[in-house]
Image 1: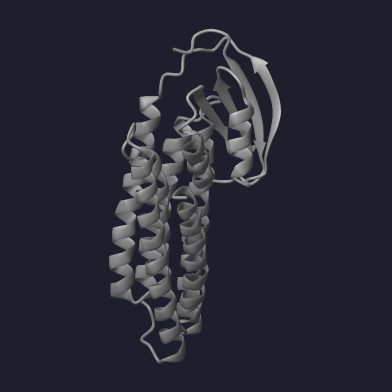
Image 2: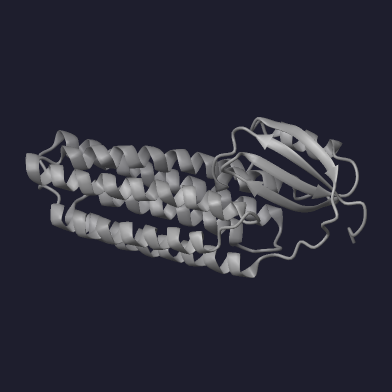
Length: 269
């Protein structure tokens, strides 16, 4: 057990800006036995590694990820207790459940109301579920299993987004019934409330020791912006009597979904 002469090394990771990069780093370092704990501060792009022994292998692994990793400082530490915060896990599981529930709700109502904005936002909710799920699934399980799940999730997300793009193109060049703007607004308002609840839940757990929660808050804040975008698009659909605002917001969100999918695929490498 790692009880004495523990050291902590702080790294700057310039390209670490969401939980996906955290998962990539965790899986890369998973096989190094002298690591006791990883403390991520994603908003400040810092990683503190508590370890026993040489840092060279750890530093080499971080540099190999090409995420702009650079060692800042290594120092002794008296900290040896790294019990996992079960409450934090429960909160993240709650956020995952809310995101997945609204993926289902928005996908169904998006199809019924003919709104690509809602369909795209539903996939963004699914993307969030994947990111949280990958980090929580099979705790203590094998790294191979987690990588397989990440790969399946990434390709599934890309496939759905491509289908969404093709549907947007079809609707752009054909005469289509206008999406139901009132359904777009109502569902997006509820999604906005759901994301607000997620932010509140994550805010409750925020402390200096819970940097992952801060990162999750930033992640969820982006969803709030997307929800507002769909609401604005719905207002413009009604005002302009055109489906173009809905197609535009759908395109923007599908691009974000694909970007998220590529981040998830990085985890599977």
